[in-house]
Image (cartoon, rainbow, N blue to C red; front, side, top):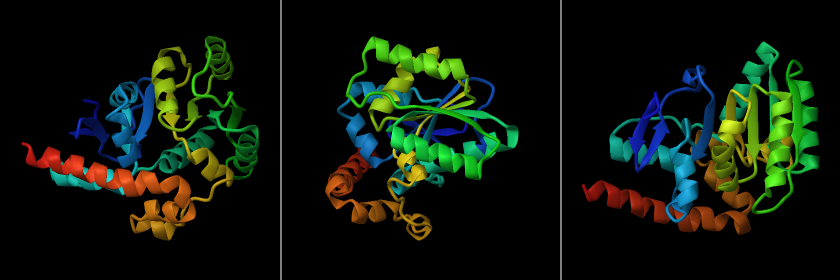
Length: 241
Protein backbone atom coordinates (compact mmCIF):
# COMPACT_ATOMS: atom_id res chain seq x y z
CA UNK A 1 0.00 0.00 0.00
CA UNK A 2 1.37 3.46 -0.89
CA UNK A 3 2.38 5.71 1.99
CA UNK A 4 -0.29 8.06 3.33
CA UNK A 5 -3.08 5.87 1.91
CA UNK A 6 -5.81 3.69 3.37
CA UNK A 7 -7.17 0.46 1.90
CA UNK A 8 -10.91 0.76 1.25
CA UNK A 9 -13.34 -0.97 -1.14
CA UNK A 10 -10.46 -2.52 -3.08
CA UNK A 11 -8.39 0.64 -3.61
CA UNK A 12 -5.58 2.49 -1.82
CA UNK A 13 -7.18 5.89 -1.19
CA UNK A 14 -4.94 8.87 -0.46
CA UNK A 15 -5.72 9.97 3.09
CA UNK A 16 -3.63 13.04 3.84
CA UNK A 17 -2.88 16.50 2.42
CA UNK A 18 -1.18 17.24 -0.88
CA UNK A 19 1.80 18.59 1.05
CA UNK A 20 2.76 14.96 1.67
CA UNK A 21 2.85 13.89 -1.98
CA UNK A 22 5.85 11.60 -2.60
CA UNK A 23 8.73 13.40 -4.33
CA UNK A 24 11.57 10.86 -4.23
CA UNK A 25 10.40 8.93 -7.32
CA UNK A 26 8.21 9.32 -10.37
CA UNK A 27 4.61 9.58 -9.18
CA UNK A 28 1.40 8.85 -11.07
CA UNK A 29 -1.63 10.60 -9.59
CA UNK A 30 -5.13 9.46 -10.53
CA UNK A 31 -8.49 10.27 -8.96
CA UNK A 32 -11.48 8.13 -8.04
CA UNK A 33 -15.14 9.05 -7.64
CA UNK A 34 -18.32 6.99 -7.42
CA UNK A 35 -18.68 6.93 -11.20
CA UNK A 36 -15.14 5.75 -11.93
CA UNK A 37 -15.46 3.13 -9.18
CA UNK A 38 -18.61 1.73 -10.81
CA UNK A 39 -17.14 1.80 -14.32
CA UNK A 40 -14.01 0.04 -13.07
CA UNK A 41 -16.03 -2.91 -11.77
CA UNK A 42 -16.74 -3.87 -15.39
CA UNK A 43 -13.50 -2.65 -16.95
CA UNK A 44 -10.51 -4.67 -15.74
CA UNK A 45 -7.93 -2.48 -17.49
CA UNK A 46 -9.36 0.65 -15.89
CA UNK A 47 -9.54 -0.97 -12.46
CA UNK A 48 -5.94 -2.12 -12.81
CA UNK A 49 -4.86 1.42 -13.74
CA UNK A 50 -6.56 2.89 -10.66
CA UNK A 51 -5.09 0.20 -8.39
CA UNK A 52 -1.60 0.83 -9.78
CA UNK A 53 -1.77 4.55 -8.96
CA UNK A 54 1.06 5.86 -6.80
CA UNK A 55 -1.52 8.30 -5.44
CA UNK A 56 -5.29 7.83 -5.83
CA UNK A 57 -7.11 10.97 -4.76
CA UNK A 58 -10.63 10.83 -3.24
CA UNK A 59 -12.34 13.05 -5.81
CA UNK A 60 -15.91 13.03 -4.53
CA UNK A 61 -17.99 13.34 -1.40
CA UNK A 62 -19.28 9.78 -1.97
CA UNK A 63 -15.73 8.39 -1.75
CA UNK A 64 -15.05 10.37 1.43
CA UNK A 65 -18.31 9.12 2.96
CA UNK A 66 -17.58 5.51 1.95
CA UNK A 67 -14.15 5.55 3.62
CA UNK A 68 -15.69 6.94 6.80
CA UNK A 69 -18.48 4.34 6.71
CA UNK A 70 -16.21 1.36 6.02
CA UNK A 71 -13.00 2.35 7.82
CA UNK A 72 -14.25 4.81 10.45
CA UNK A 73 -11.61 7.27 9.25
CA UNK A 74 -12.31 10.84 8.16
CA UNK A 75 -10.48 11.97 5.02
CA UNK A 76 -10.81 15.09 2.89
CA UNK A 77 -12.04 15.27 -0.67
CA UNK A 78 -9.23 16.22 -3.08
CA UNK A 79 -10.44 16.96 -6.59
CA UNK A 80 -8.46 17.04 -9.81
CA UNK A 81 -8.78 20.83 -9.69
CA UNK A 82 -7.09 20.80 -6.27
CA UNK A 83 -3.99 18.87 -7.40
CA UNK A 84 -3.85 21.10 -10.49
CA UNK A 85 -3.85 24.31 -8.44
CA UNK A 86 -1.38 22.84 -5.93
CA UNK A 87 1.06 21.93 -8.70
CA UNK A 88 0.77 25.29 -10.46
CA UNK A 89 1.52 27.23 -7.27
CA UNK A 90 4.56 25.05 -6.60
CA UNK A 91 5.79 25.26 -10.20
CA UNK A 92 5.40 29.02 -10.25
CA UNK A 93 7.40 29.35 -7.04
CA UNK A 94 10.19 27.13 -8.41
CA UNK A 95 10.13 28.38 -12.02
CA UNK A 96 9.08 24.91 -13.12
CA UNK A 97 7.80 23.34 -16.32
CA UNK A 98 4.49 21.66 -17.08
CA UNK A 99 2.96 19.97 -20.11
CA UNK A 100 -0.75 19.67 -20.93
CA UNK A 101 -1.55 16.58 -23.01
CA UNK A 102 -5.13 16.27 -24.23
CA UNK A 103 -8.22 18.31 -25.13
CA UNK A 104 -8.59 20.65 -28.13
CA UNK A 105 -6.26 23.33 -29.46
CA UNK A 106 -8.84 25.97 -28.47
CA UNK A 107 -8.91 24.76 -24.86
CA UNK A 108 -5.12 24.46 -24.68
CA UNK A 109 -4.65 27.98 -26.04
CA UNK A 110 -6.99 29.33 -23.36
CA UNK A 111 -5.03 27.43 -20.70
CA UNK A 112 -1.73 28.91 -21.91
CA UNK A 113 -3.20 32.41 -21.93
CA UNK A 114 -4.49 32.10 -18.37
CA UNK A 115 -1.23 30.59 -17.13
CA UNK A 116 0.76 33.55 -18.46
CA UNK A 117 -1.43 35.89 -16.43
CA UNK A 118 -1.67 33.90 -13.19
CA UNK A 119 1.59 31.93 -13.10
CA UNK A 120 4.14 33.86 -15.18
CA UNK A 121 7.12 31.89 -13.88
CA UNK A 122 5.90 28.59 -15.34
CA UNK A 123 7.20 27.38 -18.70
CA UNK A 124 4.42 25.49 -20.45
CA UNK A 125 3.95 23.38 -23.54
CA UNK A 126 0.83 21.63 -24.85
CA UNK A 127 -0.29 19.05 -27.37
CA UNK A 128 -3.75 18.08 -28.63
CA UNK A 129 -3.83 14.40 -29.65
CA UNK A 130 -6.42 13.03 -32.08
CA UNK A 131 -9.92 12.62 -30.65
CA UNK A 132 -10.39 8.86 -30.86
CA UNK A 133 -10.93 5.85 -28.61
CA UNK A 134 -7.63 4.10 -29.34
CA UNK A 135 -4.35 5.69 -30.41
CA UNK A 136 -2.08 4.08 -32.98
CA UNK A 137 1.49 3.17 -32.09
CA UNK A 138 2.70 6.12 -34.16
CA UNK A 139 0.36 8.53 -32.31
CA UNK A 140 1.54 7.24 -28.94
CA UNK A 141 5.15 7.72 -29.99
CA UNK A 142 4.43 11.26 -31.14
CA UNK A 143 2.87 12.15 -27.78
CA UNK A 144 5.74 10.62 -25.83
CA UNK A 145 8.33 12.38 -28.00
CA UNK A 146 6.70 15.79 -27.53
CA UNK A 147 6.49 15.32 -23.75
CA UNK A 148 9.98 13.91 -23.34
CA UNK A 149 11.66 16.51 -25.54
CA UNK A 150 10.19 19.16 -23.23
CA UNK A 151 11.03 17.25 -20.00
CA UNK A 152 8.28 18.76 -17.79
CA UNK A 153 8.32 18.60 -14.03
CA UNK A 154 4.59 17.87 -14.21
CA UNK A 155 2.60 16.25 -16.99
CA UNK A 156 -1.14 16.92 -16.90
CA UNK A 157 -3.16 14.39 -18.90
CA UNK A 158 -6.69 15.35 -19.90
CA UNK A 159 -8.23 12.72 -22.17
CA UNK A 160 -11.31 11.89 -20.03
CA UNK A 161 -11.69 8.74 -17.97
CA UNK A 162 -11.01 5.89 -18.38
CA UNK A 163 -8.79 6.55 -21.43
CA UNK A 164 -6.42 8.92 -19.61
CA UNK A 165 -5.77 6.58 -16.68
CA UNK A 166 -5.16 3.61 -18.99
CA UNK A 167 -2.83 5.65 -21.20
CA UNK A 168 -0.80 7.09 -18.33
CA UNK A 169 -0.43 3.68 -16.66
CA UNK A 170 0.59 1.95 -19.88
CA UNK A 171 3.19 4.57 -20.80
CA UNK A 172 4.40 5.64 -17.35
CA UNK A 173 7.81 3.99 -17.69
CA UNK A 174 8.42 5.85 -20.97
CA UNK A 175 7.44 9.30 -19.70
CA UNK A 176 10.19 11.71 -18.65
CA UNK A 177 8.28 13.64 -15.96
CA UNK A 178 8.49 13.52 -12.19
CA UNK A 179 4.75 13.91 -11.62
CA UNK A 180 1.98 12.64 -13.92
CA UNK A 181 -1.58 13.79 -13.12
CA UNK A 182 -4.69 12.59 -14.94
CA UNK A 183 -7.18 15.38 -14.36
CA UNK A 184 -9.76 15.15 -17.17
CA UNK A 185 -12.39 17.90 -16.92
CA UNK A 186 -9.94 20.26 -15.18
CA UNK A 187 -8.58 21.26 -18.59
CA UNK A 188 -12.00 22.67 -19.50
CA UNK A 189 -12.57 24.15 -16.03
CA UNK A 190 -9.28 26.03 -16.08
CA UNK A 191 -9.71 27.14 -19.69
CA UNK A 192 -13.20 28.39 -18.88
CA UNK A 193 -14.81 26.34 -21.67
CA UNK A 194 -16.84 24.53 -18.99
CA UNK A 195 -17.79 26.35 -15.80
CA UNK A 196 -17.10 24.51 -12.54
CA UNK A 197 -19.80 24.88 -9.83
CA UNK A 198 -19.15 27.75 -7.43
CA UNK A 199 -17.27 27.48 -4.14
CA UNK A 200 -20.61 27.46 -2.30
CA UNK A 201 -21.60 24.17 -3.94
CA UNK A 202 -18.11 22.74 -3.43
CA UNK A 203 -17.89 23.71 0.26
CA UNK A 204 -21.32 22.19 0.91
CA UNK A 205 -20.19 18.91 -0.62
CA UNK A 206 -22.69 19.42 -3.44
CA UNK A 207 -20.42 19.96 -6.43
CA UNK A 208 -22.04 16.90 -8.02
CA UNK A 209 -25.46 18.57 -7.79
CA UNK A 210 -24.13 21.76 -9.34
CA UNK A 211 -22.72 19.79 -12.28
CA UNK A 212 -25.96 17.82 -12.62
CA UNK A 213 -28.04 21.00 -12.77
CA UNK A 214 -25.70 22.59 -15.33
CA UNK A 215 -25.44 19.54 -17.60
CA UNK A 216 -28.43 17.25 -16.82
CA UNK A 217 -28.36 15.34 -20.12
CA UNK A 218 -24.68 14.45 -19.77
CA UNK A 219 -24.51 13.99 -16.01
CA UNK A 220 -27.80 12.35 -14.98
CA UNK A 221 -26.57 8.80 -15.47
CA UNK A 222 -23.31 9.46 -13.63
CA UNK A 223 -25.09 10.67 -10.49
CA UNK A 224 -28.69 9.43 -10.55
CA UNK A 225 -27.93 5.91 -11.80
CA UNK A 226 -24.39 5.20 -10.61
CA UNK A 227 -24.95 6.97 -7.27
CA UNK A 228 -27.38 4.30 -5.99
CA UNK A 229 -25.25 1.55 -7.58
CA UNK A 230 -22.23 2.79 -5.63
CA UNK A 231 -24.18 3.04 -2.35
CA UNK A 232 -25.52 -0.50 -2.76
CA UNK A 233 -22.00 -1.82 -3.41
CA UNK A 234 -20.64 -0.12 -0.29
CA UNK A 235 -23.51 -1.48 1.84
CA UNK A 236 -22.80 -4.98 0.56
CA UNK A 237 -19.13 -4.61 1.47
CA UNK A 238 -20.02 -3.35 4.95
CA UNK A 239 -22.52 -6.01 5.86
CA UNK A 240 -20.91 -9.01 4.14
CA UNK A 241 -18.03 -8.99 6.64
